[in-house]
Image (cartoon, rainbow, N blue to C red; front, side, top):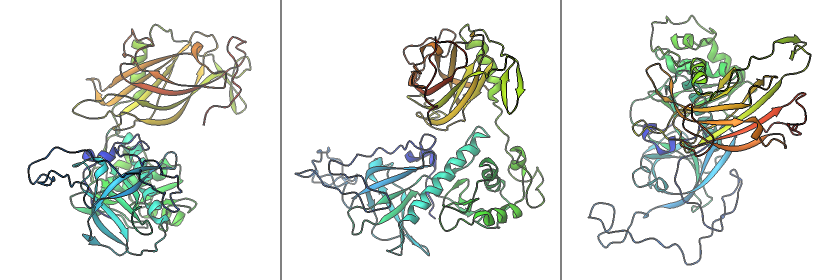
Length: 494
């Protein structure tokens, strides 16, 4: 494991909620061939005549530019393929990058060399301060590199969900990726992440040891077990403060996540020796293991004051654009499913909130922390918060029942920045989209389009976007509504 810089200054930190990566790297020119990330390196053929490098203005001596006027910034660099893992789609994304690795390691562990590295694709300053981890064993199975990055990025996803509970960033994992050094013999792989300065500490391992002096790491591991519906547990936490790296994930079936996955044996070992603390209590996690710590001991956190359902009621009254709330028909229980009093099933709308683009954050606080609120009649529901992204990705499915009397013919979607709140702890709106049901193009089963976000005010109308765009997939399920609305003939989008 290697120490790295604060993620607030790490340009690679700003992701969607996990799959849009912020590096600004050039793409390979023609000749770059698709390759399996676990197989041989992609073929690379430079364009005929080589590369033309733009003439840079001559700088004063000592600024990295030779006195002759020749820019030597690329001296000692090599081309590589950067491979980032998306924990949501479970897919790998490739980018062409230019790296500069020092010739000798600055540290060596039992399995890996640690080498200082620059990623020039991120810029002259932003690209500094990386560490490359290269295996001492030159014939090590390359899949180990991919397993390590997959675990770290999936753990980062669980950190985002943990943070959602408190409405702020509490913990984080360093962004890690695999790089394939395509210009070297046998195209070796390296694991890459930012270096962090500070006191490097281990908080628990992948078995039964935990440093109970710290509440946050132990509560986070406990949280992942409950939040995953007892499918996995993230442990072996270590790093600087609450910025962590090199975690281990145990899965209930013991599959995946490398050789350190101890399955249910590892999960039971952790839970039996865990001491619940004040953060576990705040999250309402069930008590497991040893006698809990007093709630006055160690770090205490409060769940977010902002309660979406309260804000929904307020914004619905102000911004439903004159729509009258329709009372839902009374339901009676019929077997295992809800039915209306006349015995028919209720009409409903299913929305896949995909993502948003072009959102604007505060100049001082940076990219916004974003959530979407959907309102339909008396119903209102919200997505999770995606932190620090102007292009958040949710891929969350929401379903609401439609009143049978037809008085509600429009759904309203409001995008909020929870990073900014007013005096009543209400989040700041970034924009609103009105989705009239009559305009939905659902003859193929669902309507898939990007909606412009207008001003968040009672005078909002469809039209010019003032705050970006919202991508929705809307699927309606109709029952006895007549021929005026076509019935879908496909299932909702995955």
